[in-house]
Length: 339
Ligand code: NAP
Ligand code: GDP
Image (cartoon, rainbow, N blue to C red):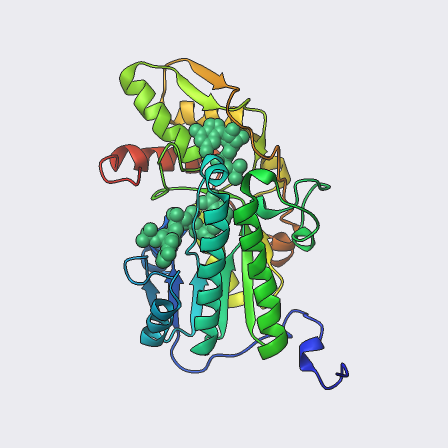
């Protein structure tokens, strides 16, 4: 097939892939009751993030099991969204990933394939899905940028999640090539905030440390940080991520993904993160490190240069302020928090 006759072979430039929506806008948010979904709901409903005439629908697994294509299709037929923010996924911290790479691989592949196809079938003009900086190659140069997703194997601790998530980028390119769709993805770093999963075994490091410190304080025990404390992470507050998601949905017209991250200079060690949790909760006990536990990938330092080219003035909530708000939320909502 000649390049001239195949519009799919057009270069994927910004603006090249716009499909305009005329008429009412209905945004369906999958995973709408999770950490990121709740933050988006807050920005939409409490910060005036919704625009006049827009309808926002937040769904969870209770509304449809997205592992099942018939249920997924029925959900999309029922709501007929024009825009989709696709968050639903099997999600977990390092230790849950290490226990269940096969489940992370299969569940996320099914969910993503079902959601993207169902969105396409109802003619949704925009789908913004969610990748993660932890899917990047382990053996790499730094900082990592958006062009490097497929440049080598991910860290072995979470290869199931990583390969499944990388396929979203492949899906997006294929939907664009075959149907001209502008389905894209964002790449956040480690997210935290109110409504996180504070389960100690399954959750990410910050909610895990917050919950462990809360219990240790009550019981007069030391706070045990897992691993050496040396690995480094960039953290993003869920509310900052939510504000950026709305911008991506409305203003970002590339199929290629975009990293949503604080700067490289704001990367902290796990030890520094633990100290910040101690300070936020006013934890008075001893802090110890269990070096029999895994460290995971040492660092995934990501560049936010592309984001800053679009939004040079975006201000992230300072880490300590965001962490304090998260700790306060956890303490105030201890009985009902996911844990
Ligand atoms: P979360 O709090 O665990 O929320 C996940 C959501 O997915 C929940 O609403 C859950 O529904 C839904 N879900 C899971 N399996 C489902 C199924 N089979 N059918 C329907 N819904 C299903 O996760 P999150 O942290 O908000 O993550 C949101 C997105 O961000 C994910 O795509 C994740 O990969 C990505 N991400 C997260 C982080 C992070 O640090 N948390 C970092 C980078 C990227 P229920 O509420 O009913 O269980
Ligand atoms: P990752 O950023 O995708 O690797 O996942 P996590 O958010 O689970 O962070 C894992 C890093 O935090 C590793 O270096 C762990 O050794 C360290 N860590 C320290 N304490 C904890 C904890 O209580 N829970 C978790 N999940 N990780 C911890």
